[in-house]
Image 1: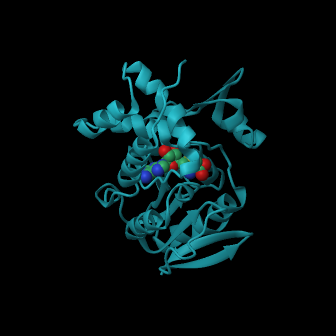
Image 2 (image 1 turned 90 degrees about the vertical axis):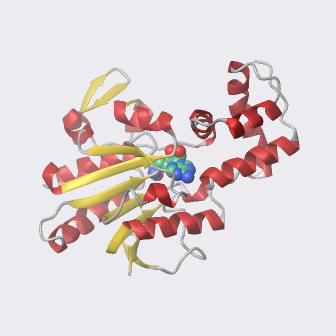
Image 3 (image 1 turned 180 degrees about the vertical axis):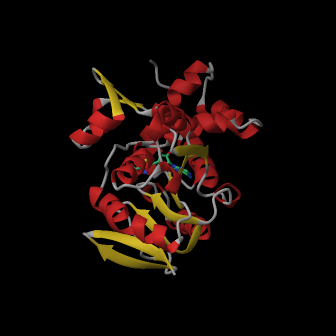
Length: 273
Ligand SMILES: C[S@@+](CC[C@H](N)C(=O)[O-])C[C@H]1O[C@@H](n2cnc3c(N)ncnc32)[C@H](O)[C@@H]1O
């Protein structure tokens, strides 16, 4: 595949456009990433230059081009049972606390930036293993990229994704056929997927009165201003006293003071106060 050169000025135009629409900030050092990932789209569309591509996405009215652009620039790495300390605090401590506070009403959980679904499905399996029934919780999962949402709904995973799943869960909740691991429909049906751009409050307003938000390993792609906007949107979606989990390598330092950090089992959990 012959690569099409990306001029610095068009890189900056594209970078600013992606930032404005998603909050994802692409540093100068990552120009090659844009060049590589978008070249394929240019070739498919028979476009001769990145300038033509930029004009095309700016003029696209139905949002399809933007969807394709997001699919190309997002980093979707994820796997089941990622950062287990946090998951254990959620399943062993927080879920039952919320359930008794809610006086039996469903626990509302949101996996924001869920990528291909491993995170929300892990939460669902853990709750069932803790003795919760599917009628006692609801899990919403969202992402900006339609490509990953479609994979999440299919719920068929490769060996890399499932490598940390305990043996008893694998046996109980997956149909294994060689390298392919198909999730049991019982778990699939506990998660509702939707497209939500976290930077856009019109989108995040769709989710309100949430008890727990997992928004892990996505803030790293945003600059401070975009992080503040996203975290403020998440704050508005949470119930008073609700919990926010961010990735263990991420921090709310210099972003907000609206949450109280609690430490449990080596995990930091932020609580809306
Ligand atoms: C690295 S994955 C994290 C998946 C999972 N939360 C985890 O920790 O394993 C980051 C996800 O964030 C999504 N993302 C990036 N910007 C977003 C935005 N503005 N709104 C919603 N999702 C976004 C990407 O599409 C990607 O699927």
